[in-house]
Amino acid sequence: MSDLTNHETRMLEARKMQVDAFKQLVTISTGSIVLASAFLQRASGHKWIFAVALLGFLASIVGCMGVIFDCVLDLEHKGERPTTAFYLAMCGLGILGFLVGLLGLSIFALLNLG
Image (cartoon, rainbow, N blue to C red; front, side, top):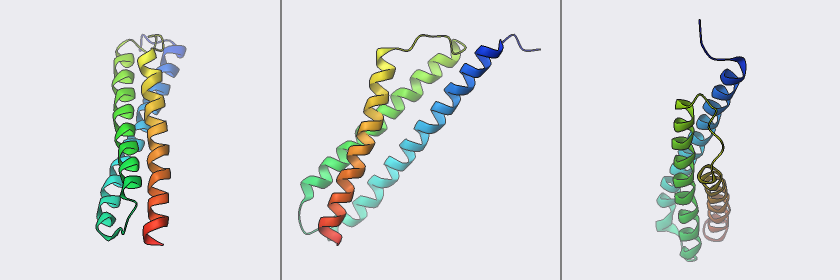
């Protein structure tokens, strides 16, 4: 029989779902960098927009990995560790970086491949 309460079980499941969501963002950001790099040779200009998108995706990867590591630490505490400023900052960096990368890549594609 498990020594976890119903609340602790729900908190652990929530953390596991957060880890899965941020792992997906890491995967998408990494794939976007690889895909965009393949089209960089065809670009006629506006390469600074590509650099902004690249930095956005890299920031997203760093932020998401920070969230994942923080969630793993929280799993060791059965989901009862208080939310830290590091966790909030990494969430913001992961999501905002992804949005900047996505927007930059979209603008880059419209200007160069359209």
